[in-house]
Amino acid sequence: MSRAYEIVGQPNINGKIKVQGSKNSALAIIVASLLTKDVICLENVPNIADVLELLKIIKKLNCPVSFLKNNLIIDASNITYQSLLFPEIKSFRASYYFVGAFLTLFNKVEIFLPGGCKIGKRPIDQHIKGLTSLNVNLCLTNDILRANSLDIIGNEIKLDIASVGATVNLILTSLNANDKTIIKNAAKEPEIIDLVNFLKQIGANIIGEGTNTIIIYPIKKFHKANYKIMPDRIATGTYLLYGALFAKKLTLTNINTMDNYALINALISLGAEMNIRKNSITIYKLNNFDKLQIKTDVYPAFPSDLQQIMSTFLFSGQGISLIEETLFENRFTFLEEISKMNGKFLIIDNKALIIPSKFKSGVVSCNDLRGGAALLLACLMASGTSILKNVEYIERGYENIIEVLQNINVNIKEIELHEA
Ligand code: EPZ
Image (tube, rainbow, N blue to C red; front, side, top):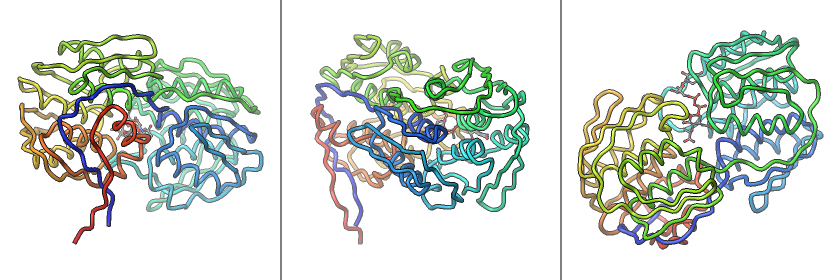
């Protein structure tokens, strides 16, 4: 037996969504909060599977947690070192943030390599390059990384790729090095800014966040603080695209509109009607639109995490759209499922041509988080009732998505599939 969603296409979306807190910021900040060895209160933490998996690991480190209505309290005052060879480590990507946190806390770490969506090879060579230059000894055997350093030495690191994960890990590792660390070609994503804002709240001395050069001045001790996680810009973009196709009127609140600059620009270029304010957006459905050329890249360019949902959206265009995915080499696999719904496309290397198509209802399966959100949109676009399988992928990153969509007049419900 497996869980699935039954979705009736062509909804008349109407209403409001208070957008969840950011998955990708919350995961980094929750791990960073351990550095205080004190009690930390975090607000606006999304109640999603990846966060719950992370909290299972944290509880194994002798850190009691309380997580109610998006408020998370972690007591890290008696945190104890453990080898991080738990199965949960392999169930999501952000578990590798323990590398930086444990090197700062314990000067050592032993951890399974992380899991995460199969959207590409997702190597960790940039993490290794940076850690090595910080005088960390590393040993990678099979799928276990062992690292230690009695003397983390601040250094200048130039990343070959503006990797979000490597930037996070290297910031966490260098926080109490023996001298300052400069990270060049650092990731500029809003989630990095949110992490650094949190770290400053607990006493860190960092400048340059949001630019491609971040400088971390070492400090010896951190202190407790309360912090509110930033809004989830990918959930915002997801619901914005759902609304752009089906909303009589859809208002998104609790957002940082500026974080979705690239998507908003793309929607404006298609003629979308929106009321845009600093922390909310109202969107009305686009009755017809032509086509787009989208090239994903690091922030502030169009985000790879919205590529699959935008690609699906563009099947409703009148012209042929071109999508170029530059970050991950395997982020078009969801299109194989869309072909079962009569979606027509052509993939050439890292480019996809999206050919206007009328989707027919069907049974499709998620195989990654954002591809799952894209297939949910495809089910909304289809005429008739569709079944979406492997919905656990979606629930890794979208909080209460069934309730959120039902509240804006979408006919969606969870069903149990008894597979032969
Ligand atoms: C983070 O993944 C996000 N995940 C991803 O969101 C997001 O797509 C990605 O950043 C890019 O914005 C979390 O924050 C938990 P990267 P991360 O390191 O850190 C290559 C979602 O759906 N690379 O910036 O893994 C890598 O292969 C997820 O919420 C190396 O080559 O992304 C990729 O092509 C999916 N070597 C590119 O860089 C390295 O050492 C960007 O990866 C590290 C990365």
